Image 1 (cartoon, rainbow, N blue to C red):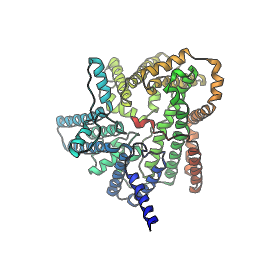
Image 2 (image 1 turned 90 degrees about the vertical axis):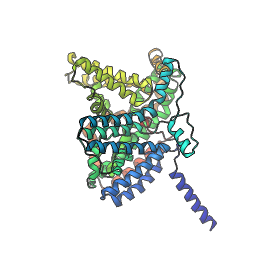
Image 3 (image 1 turned 135 degrees about the vertical axis):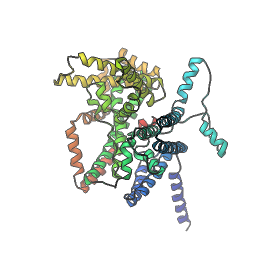
Image 4 (image 1 turned 30 degrees about the horizontal axis):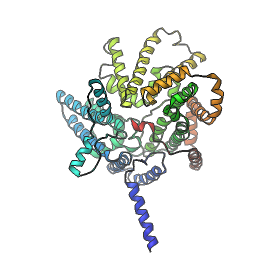
Length: 515
């Protein structure tokens, strides 16, 4: 009897532990706990999938719980964003006055950007202000101060923690309001449907950024999942796990993180290889997340937009940004670049608009001047390319050698700018540049390759699979998706076993969780 009670207590304690927020063990796609969670979520979904209101409500509450497990107390911000944007959207849709409609859009954008700015940029702006005006203002977490006052909690108010995924759901909320204003979409039928749109858990914390006009119509469509789509979803999930765990995490833990932590302690060649390796790491990490998100959503009958299109095949910087983080690039174009004038007001104004977009795009990625520098370098490169292509004798040259050179040059430039994206300080970025330019010793290349041969092999696998022809990749997806379920299951079990055998350290959070 007592052993039975003890077992029950252990079960209860395990349930309490799962339901509670643990900042050291967030529920992420690479943990076994997530897949247990998704199994039960999908079991419940299978009972409700053809009843729109119940299905959307169920997934909304599941998504809020998922966000609580990822970000803790800050799920309140998500709830507030849902309530505020739904109310403004409903009023906006019913109003015919142009002045009031513009005012409502302005209020919605201000509220969303204020929340994003406060939690993401409070330290950045305060530190910058203090340095410029020699002041000593201190950042206070007013949300936790309010909680302590009204609910008698005991949160520390001297630190603002960046809520996971705030940049993504803020941009989606803005797209909802602007799409209603432009008459591209009607408001959701109820706040629960809107809450589901804004918080859908597969893409909530790291994208892809889903526009209201693309996703909301799906809320009211019957569940549909063909046999080929089921296989495709499974393939996407396996591919995402492979990218994240087998490639990205392995080279990050065993090589890249060490170099960026102390670049002056390593040779120029090691620093250079770290930069090149980081390009494949961040691609496999971020695109791996979106692959899994797209697969999970497809299991539930929802189609998320493609977010990457082999970006390192790009032949110039402009093409790269059409292939990398496509949902963000398109969002910035349609909701920032075009509204501030786009290319309608002459060459000079167009160039200014482009630089503003890239600088703010850089700042979106993080509250640091390093990200501003990174965005600025990419903006300058876009301006240079826009003028160079008019006079370049190679722009329309289709020879293999020229095409390879374009791809290689673009890749090396993008990799170079990521010194500022990845480094923790300007001093660290400069130290890495100095090591590459002044401490590059060709004689040790062989020794470095032999010492890190496993890293070189994994990096090579990442680039080879990335640069495979698209028709090969599409053919592999179709062959897997159309194979018998037994074959898919065997391949899945073998792949998962192989992936998790390669995990040699504590699982790393996805890079874009911090954005």
